[in-house]
Image (cartoon, rainbow, N blue to C red; front, side, top):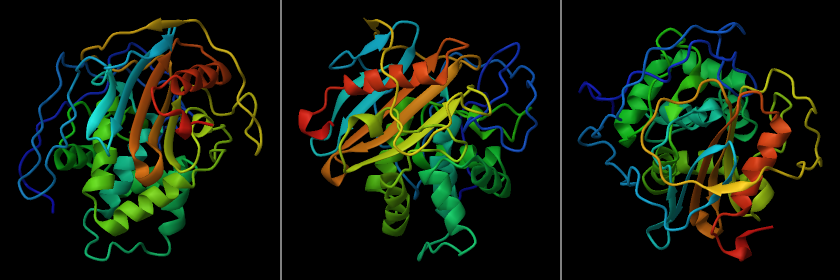
Length: 335
């Protein structure tokens, strides 16, 4: 199903004089834990990508329309927020929908989709790969992601998936750091496009494999970070989640243990209008929560955040969870 038609997309991820050594589901890939060099400068506007005829058509999220409901965001935090109601066929929130963030582990969704792309019609997974795919999706395992990323041509994964899904804001990691899958640039709008593809377009075996693992996400990541912030701490089952975090170091200050709770408290809130395009922030700490909420995966939720450089994980997790708890979704879906 691959096409030889050239893809038209952005070929950059950020500008920065020095970039944090990424850790904790941040996308180091096989690269050493040294500070990488500056990435190439980013263009000022996103590419327009048309899917190849015969593959997947664009799923039509508006690039940056004003939010119907403004979601309060803690001071100092930049957030991209999109909520799509699949039953109503409507967007409840589009706030900084096209704002670019470095993906951290959210790119693992694209790695998984790319892995399955040419495995039809059965889409069966070899016994050796199944536990690696499962732990990558459920527990955000970096080693598994790096193995699939390298085997599939690294940055080529993003090139192919942008074209196939008609993503509008997603951009390649820097050519100088091809192993840093977490430096892929993404937006909340594109995350909704990805989930809509999984739910509405993907072959049934692919949809069932990915969603069953996202519905069974673990409290702790394999790097011992607590990944229960955001959606898992806000919404009742049934819900699915794929989390991302980057820039907090190799070892969490408080290693995750089953049953541990999120710390309370976050800064004051301010209303943030929809934003335009941007090069993703490669210095601040990023924390993302994405997934589905409600019966039949009714609501698709994407909340992407970047926090001031030096922010501790516990503070960022509390701030992101506070944003998620304020989302305009039915009280019946919330804990």
